[in-house]
Length: 113
Length: 116
Image (cartoon, rainbow over all chains, first blue to last red; front, side, top):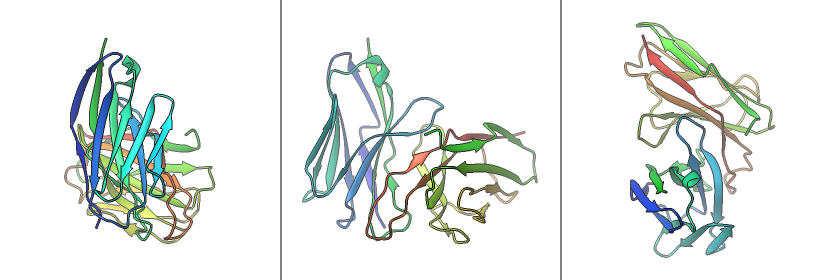
């Protein structure tokens, strides 16, 4: 089955700096990669996703890049703000798998004011 | 995602007791999922269901049971066989367009289960 590795597990940045979170996946058939943000005690919320027919997708300060050959994808947050502090999860989906998503272990991002 | 409602928000279980967590969605989603999240950990899949009256075990199904009698509802029962049930339980749902498509999952607010 699919295995998703996520790094780093914790990340601290100064307000205004950029943050990068990286994930690798094992199943070359996976073709959908969402990212979720989870604030303490709350539900994970989808913040951006990418499909394998594109290499990069942006939404304001957030971008995701995908390298299918290397089987890794990354989340980039620019001009970080304290409200960006949360746990971020990546996930991968193999269309042939009914379970749909396999999640990474999460990254605790702390933005220092 | 106001369309997915989990209840209760907090639940306490006594030794030897079965408890049921509710998950209801009004998004007309086909598929529903249950995840367990332990402190500082990721999301582990317990059970999932693509259509009514059908469900499959996930990675950690032992000690849990589910039913899917209605499209809108996917309750999870934590049985007495689950010896370490203390965790945050998240329900999710998505459209299911077949095995050649991928759809984003949307989550409920979760139920925090503790042992008395």
